[in-house]
Length: 236
View (cartoon, rainbow, N blue to C red):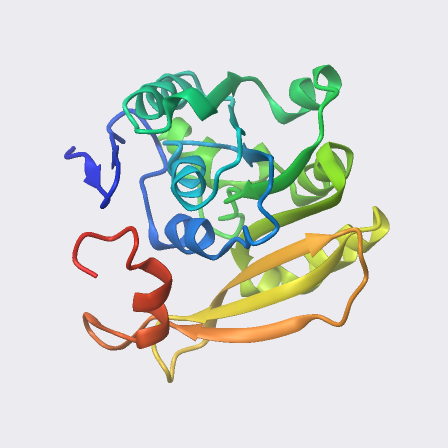
């Protein structure tokens, strides 16, 4: 399994069940950092790609990841240490529940690319299943944990299947979190919306909704997609 090369860092992923995919890269490039967060948390860090992208994009002094899977945790730590921002990156080997119980700090930006293939059949690979199925990290558990870990002025950014958008918005409202920005992602102009990139905060505002189309034809990427990802992908 070859390492995944980005412009400013490299990610090894041979020990991780969830390989680098478009969802994670979109979220890492899209999550708003204009508030210049001091502290960032990636829930379910996997390879560490989200935390690494945010380290490249902002000057946050604390960028933490949490990862429950042993092999993924070790890989994440290696990827952090081998990056240009190793002094700002740290990964905790814990479940989200343990982490919430033990950590008193709050984070100004929390990101998560959660497992959400609840509609698929389970495979023979339990490690990959753990990474891909919502029963490992149900949305209600994720949202209630975020509400405790997020600073009062903080932002929570997540990528989910478009069809889960209403459910997640309802769960978030129960803990006082509201969607401020939503970007709905389509593979091609005529295809259905596949994913929603969502940014929540404790401030209730009119939701700013936009759409992102990835390509107009095979490997013909849209200007919006190129602008979003060009600081990361080698070929952009």
